[in-house]
Amino acid sequence: NAGVTQTPKFQVLKTGQSMTLQCAQDMNHEYMSWYRQDPGMGLRLIHYSVGAGITDQGEVPNGYNVSRSTTEDFPLRLLSAAPSQTSVYFCASSADRGPSNIQYFGAGTRLSVL
Amino acid sequence: GEDVEQSLFLSVREGDSSVINCTYTDSSSTYLYWYKQEPGAGLQLLTYIFSNMDMKQDQRLTVLLNKKDKHLSLRIADTQTGDSAIYFCAESRNTGGFKTIFGAGTRLFVKA
Image (cartoon, rainbow over all chains, first blue to last red; front, side, top):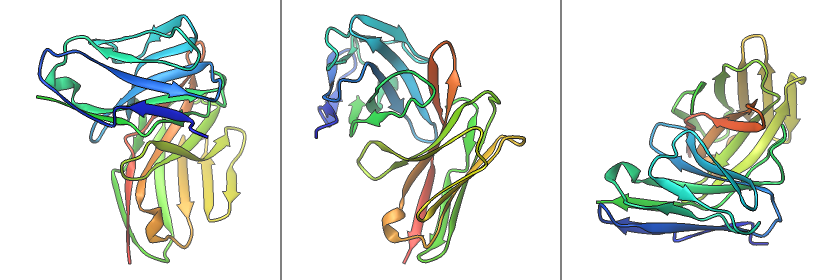
């Protein structure tokens, strides 16, 4: 079982470049989210989706766009990369957004912006 | 993460017990979680406790919840080198749909 798959695992960008971080899950989960992890800080929610065609902002959405055209895929786009976006990005999915809300995480994408 | 606090480091000797502590602020949190992150990997759910429970035990893991003090702890008995990882405390908070708030993570070092 693949679970949540993120690509690429590593990426180096120059300031101003754009790129898309891919996330796919094969568990038929409705709820997907993107987090960033920075040293000494917990995971911070960037954007989330409660189903195909529905997305919403998390706590740190600036500089990032998302779309959800299928249940399986939830790509994260950086339109114009900035050094402040250097981070580790995690995609997660869960069956619903109820109180149990157990999330399944991908292995992460380590992004450096120079 | 906002309002979920953990110490950043813990070092123990192999075979000892480890206790990782966490405080949270939202008294309405329904579920509290412990996630484990091994080097180069994503987070994996280790265990969780429902807010009407005081304790949950699962093999070497014991979770204690003190709702009055909003304090959660994870005890790992007979800690092994394979337990070296970052442990994240998290709470499920109702914000019109449930949102998971993560702490900054406690890095556990196990010395042989």
